[in-house]
Image (tube, rainbow over all chains, first blue to last red; front, side):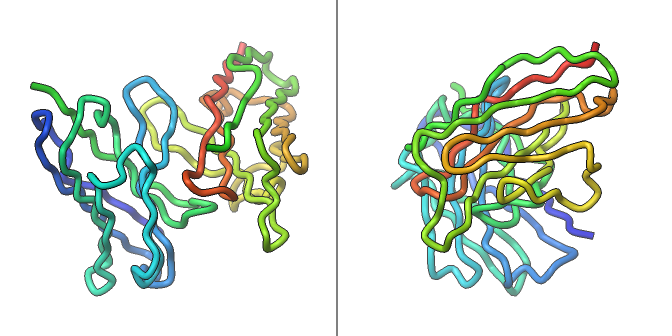
Amino acid sequence: QVQLVESGGGLVKPGGSLRLSCAASGFTFSDFYMSWIRQAPGKGLEWVSYISSSSTYRNDADSVKGRFTISRDNAKNSLYLQMNSLRAEDTAVYYCARGSREPDYWGQGTLVTVSS
Amino acid sequence: DVVMTQSPLYLPVTLGQTASISCRSSQSLVYSDGNTYLNWFRQRPGQSPRRLIYKISNRDSGVPDRFSGSGSGTDFTLKISRVEAEDAGVYYCMQGTHWPPYTFGQGTKLEIK
């Protein structure tokens, strides 16, 4: 069965960095676009980034452009999100999801808290 | 950004009755390939979102046929017939047609009375 397991979240100070990982299993990872989507505490869902199956295409929301970088390693069935220059408003649960236009499977999420 | 507007934001429904959620987009969601990338998700407390419907009206595997999606262009509806206790949660519509970025509605909290 499809499984997506995020890790790497935690508490970080404003201006700091964090790298999130998502381990995928149960499907041919290299066949699928992948995405990061976040949810601030008690709020709705916000798209962050997506990446094509072979990393040819990457797109970021304006709110994270220039600060976050999505990447993947198909040999390791893993998706990553490098987050730099973190701000308080980046505090959220970060979900990895399979697909982009129609994300069908989501992980359980990892919480990132940006606070001094 | 394409704005997705859901209504109502809170929907109390009696067991066995029908629930209907509206989702309107600020632009047409018809993509250049002819498809309309409109999805519906449900999120239960403490859980990640689960996709229920894609391309307006296609149910995901395991989703009861009590759930149906309809609409076109900028106006979409999720209908849940014969509401059950397990249907409680927050429902989101999401457009995957226009980037940047793909966008979600604000969410509709379905409460079962």
